[in-house]
View 1 (cartoon, rainbow, N blue to C red):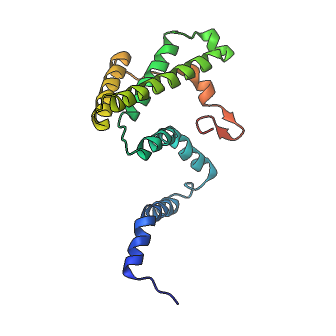
View 2 (view 1 turned 135 degrees about the horizontal axis):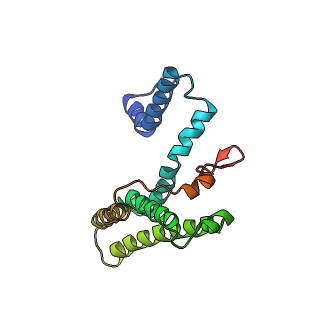
Length: 178
């Protein structure tokens, strides 16, 4: 029989520690609430985590090249406010366009273009002007948050026209996940 030495145990914990803690948390929640591991609850957890998951995918590319982008949350907030205000104020889209489905395409393309534009601005400031990524993304994030607050008047902006799409399902999977 082969026994694990102290250094080997530390190595395993260092590599798998996060997963061990995650497993312990799942077990504790499952013991504390019998509905925790039900398919509906698991689907709800995934649904609520999907926006963060999308942001994480983008962050992987940034971190692979040893960068940092702390403006991602502000970028998502600003883009969401912009899209909601476009829909609510009939800018670029109107109710008829939303009913035909063309409005969805327009607002999603605008959201993607704005997000890409903000990311491109960050990238240009870092790559061309040699400004530290932390400084650039902190500044851009603060500006975006401020613009979002100014545009929304610090009020929640509901885009009820998007509800029919975002609350629908593709089979059993909600559109927020798929």
